[in-house]
View 1 (tube, rainbow, N blue to C red):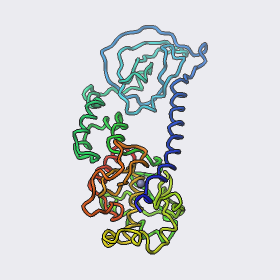
View 2 (tube, rainbow, N blue to C red):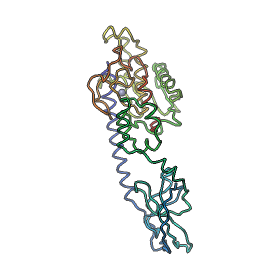
View 3 (cartoon, rainbow, N blue to C red):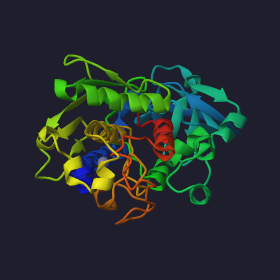
View 4 (cartoon, rainbow, N blue to C red):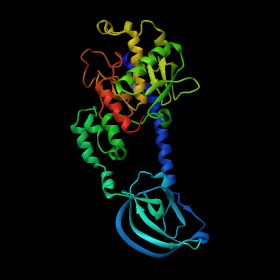
Length: 360
Ligand SMILES: [Zn+2]
């Protein structure tokens, strides 16, 4: 059953989508970084009157354009896209604008200098150098070291209480360190909540139980019931038997395999008797849905058998710190976390981390 459970189908579906997503993103990034809007130069070109170095200060930019030249003919960036970026100014230019008025522009750059240019000084709000320093992230190397010294796959409170900028600057390090990834569209979680529509009455009880498991564990309502007209996530039946899955999440909806669900003996009648005697069919389907809900939170599989997010093989993972073909650590009962619908401390800490990362 376990091999039927997760993995393959989830990943096959998801992976394709994911690659498309990456392609779209990098294409977009190339476009924006190369596109410089040229304003009608002759008509609007400003004249530089004076240029002066100034002691380095830190700023946030509220709005306005960032120009690549002091004559203000080439718009390079729109400051409103960088509300939390710390800019450093080191020189000021006084220009006579096309309309005849004088104005002071600062030449600013972000830390990596990927965003730089001239912006009207009135759009800048000075921030203390202290808070600018506070925003300085750890080096990638020291973060990797910290993660490697911390418990495997279990982001403890130390890992979850770093300066905020570390999570934005080193998102991929956390992804790889804890097998997590931003799987769900931003529109799925509003104010950290997904609104769930269960398309079949037969699934409602299991879905509610699975949602409660996460809500209780996280001590907040992350999944709430919605309607056909108002929802951000759907749980419905699908056909997984051929593709070997009982539950599947494709980035939009959760599917539960219809024929296995309809089989009153499944999965218990097909399991080792000793193991089967420890679980109920209800528990199993609750576990399947709870596992898929875990994917919506950005959790990929682990090799720890007690975890709800366990998979016996890393083959279906989109992201894996290391690969495994048998449990990294077996559970004391011999049962999977999914089969008993139990969220382990590791599952919970990973979900707390993905909240910090902004995945839900
Ligand atoms: Zn899975």
